[in-house]
Length: 507
Ligand SMILES: *[C@@H]1O[C@H](CO)[C@@H](O)[C@H](O)[C@H]1NC(C)=O
Figure 1: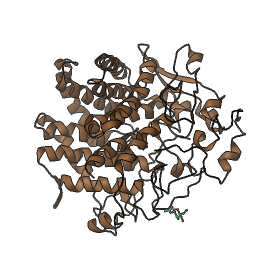
Figure 2: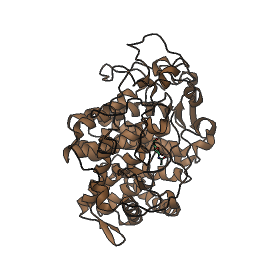
Figure 3: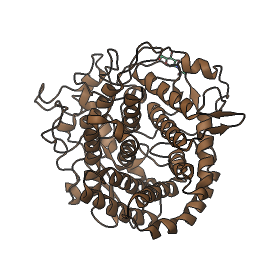
Figure 4: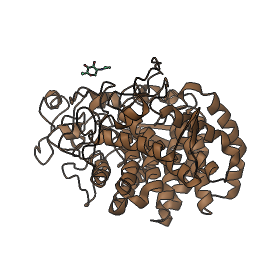
């Protein structure tokens, strides 16, 4: 059951009883982690989320082909792509965000991945092959396959699925600049990944990104207005500034390509500079959601990404983005009172709204990338009367990763299959039902309920899946019905791939 995960901002009394040092060292690291093992597993997870016809080199063997007629009701081939979480719907919005973050992980940390790099690139391609299908018709983007209400009323293996595979699209008359912008960003980011692996594919992705981006820009509107009944409350875009921000993210990805090669004309980049300035005015007025980063909100990610140009001395006119990025980083420092970011007593970043680990991994990812950008520029972050060094930001990010891997009050790894104690009853249809090999007969919609309600562990390990995680008291139920805690999602894992790659080389 995927869902909207950013709740309206809840303002807590900004009292943090823990000091900087005690948070960092509250849970002494018992043994150092095997980040390389965790990296391999975090990427393997994506194979368990695959939809469509599985290739011969599929390593997650308990999965089989599924949803082979996706798109047929609309006369298009929409097979492939990823199920976003523990259900069997293909939501374009989180799939695109996942792809962007996987690509960004590879762009910044691919050199740390060793033999896992090829698997990470495959994980991106599984998504971009689908996104290319979803954007093959000019002026149309297919943004979802599967009726989420029909899907969520059943507990079925993807291989057995007989729920409605309704196809949802946006077009000129029903705009969705947010999801189209996100899709363009994913394609553009992936084109950078493939530049050195497959030049022709890279160019295809970039050309498509530009076309989808122009469509998003020309036909402005939020997809949750056009497709409200289908996407809300699952992935309802509630961020009023979404449209512009996704465009910005896309533009920046294009700029990075333009800086590195001639794939995008210099003129495109120059033409966008005044526009980025005016869009940023809006960012600055966006108030209390500025320090978020997730599929629904790109503020913090854009500010950090564009700050790289500022820190490299290439684009002083983006100075305001760096100020925003600095402010965002300061808001994450433990011991600094801030209404939007809390820490659990055990030291985990916590934001209300459910599926907290998506915030933990994406915010930690930004801490790490910003730390690297600062290191290269020999800079620190000014935070009022104090400063935050790149080393401190790395330490904070690593502390979050270590919490996920088991350095927490429960001594539980939140990654399935990592360590000896990890969640056994994750909210995931395929993992919790017997595999097709073990139980070849079909398990119908309601016949799955007894597996959902069973106290037994899941029969199939979805190795590498990181679940929504504990509540703010560091408590975790390990129970399927508690989906906010026990459901994995692709966008929890995507930024974690980059984090684990870095720490596997710099433990
Ligand atoms: C966290 O979960 C535990 C165990 O279910 C519960 O006792 C506690 O009240 C929860 N904390 C919050 C803040 O919800």
